[in-house]
Length: 144
Image (cartoon, rainbow, N blue to C red; front, side, top):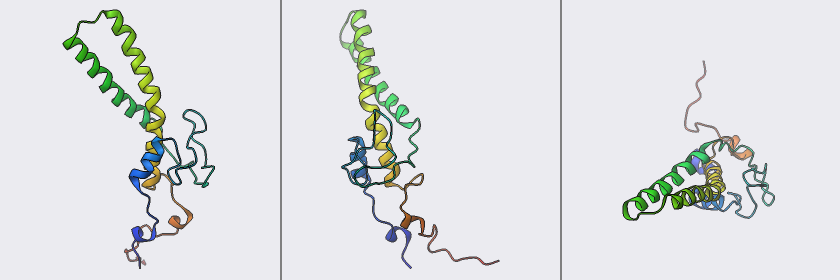
């Protein structure tokens, strides 16, 4: 009997994440994940991969907050340490930089998280063939 990993088709993690960051389908890389800014399409228009099981929820926002916070706070601290800018420059620069970075990173991070879930077969990202594979292929059946 083959093990579960031998029976399942491989899903390359880094390739699928790169595809997701580009906003493309993690399976074929040609179709789009998003119909609008962050609205996930139910399936890929090219390969018809089911994208509805994705459960990105709030994780993309938290990851973007973490990244942007480090960039902006690091930039603010560096500027305050080495230069003396007028307060008006800070009031203009940092909120605009925060907004631009957040809006740019959010769909890319969400695409990467959806692709990660797809590559790891999380939350129902399985094919009908995957569903027929036993969860514990080497376990012996216990009969009461």
